[in-house]
Image 1 (cartoon, rainbow, N blue to C red):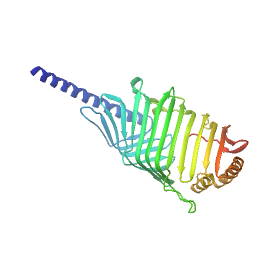
Image 2 (cartoon, one colour):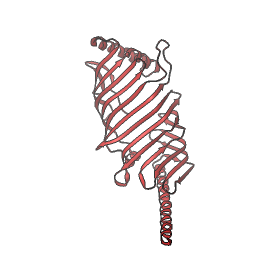
Image 3 (cartoon, rainbow, N blue to C red):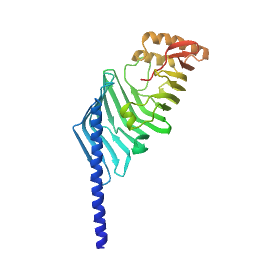
Image 4 (tube, helix red, strand yellow):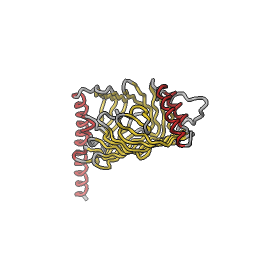
Length: 324
């Protein structure tokens, strides 16, 4: 019995020593990451960093966090941010965001208010540097800025490595409520009843900690199985595949089904998504296409993206979509 007690005490002391060593190493790695970002010219600051979770967890908590990339002007500020993991499973992390934070993109400040906004990230490969799977979710997510607002519920975005530099992305949300005024004569529910997408993206480099820190991989091809949005009597479905050119333009083909498309055009024009002149020209071309299909309220058409332009048959509709 005495030997058993001694063995248990020795094992407990050894585990405690190992945990404190692992916690110290984990904290040093996080501090080193911030130091590397500052060496790259970033603003990378936090008020405090603590690692807790003895005996089985390594839970890092940041307070007063600011990350700013001077190259693109992106700035993220959060009063609290957590990276949670099991001490014996460091390749799987849970990221937890605060209820309120701010994100600056292209000079626009966005306030992000959320409930249970978190992500699960699984890494693999040498030193766990490659992204294998990730899942982002939020029970409620509200975005506000001087450029507009939006709200959604049950947001879920999943990413999985499906091959060399290939990643499948699925996304869905319920209760998505776009901001902005609506026409009084176009009654619509407060939110969309369906918003989902399923696509595979090919990149020029694998996703991983090293590539994300240096230069994010660039998409080279998109394979969209389905993107769907339903808002009252408005329905929009997209599917197709396209290469991404060196300039970022899509080069391929997309099928579109739009129910009550004229109302969609009005909403796009009112929200400023489409300039008035472009909306008028586009509506004329789509009106012709709907008349040819025999259904004036529903569009079933194929768009071609080539040479940096979008084409409906022989009719040019403007620039091809371009990825940033």
